Image (cartoon, rainbow, N blue to C red):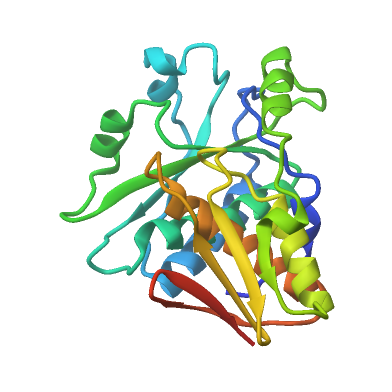
Length: 253
């Protein structure tokens, strides 16, 4: 899958949206997202699915009340842990690229883990044996201004890690691609808002890892962060691949 520099630009404009217009996606958006999903599934072994009408999974679920409005379209992030190693990490990684594609098309988006009728959605998806619905991305048209609820939630999420907090160990000098990658990773959305990810750059090797676990979605956060770092490195003309070993991910260029 080709990584797009426009996704890096989208990192700096992305913000979680919870109030949508209720309008369906336009045909060109649907076509582009379905093509992106097909490319991701072919490359990764995941089974992401776009659901054009998902209102019933939010309007009739009491935990969603007041949190999301006028939800229409979602992307169900599905995979089989027996077929995809580090499933949650991969879902976060590929899911974030997909989210940034949506943002680059001026669509509103939001990662959600549990505030929807998951059992009903799983039944509707008719999952294969062994498949798991890991998370969901809401996508759809939004108004230019945020609702009061969205503004309040945004204030809560503004406490991002500093550069030094995220890059906890380093060997000077730090290359521009590492600096750019860390800055992009600082802006990665978090499922738990607990800052569970840390990077190191030692002996010309960049690694990322989970530093604490509490809510069970830290692996998803790690995958999202890896996607952001990779796009930050790409902005400086550096491409690479993440290699997993001993609970760490190393960026091989």
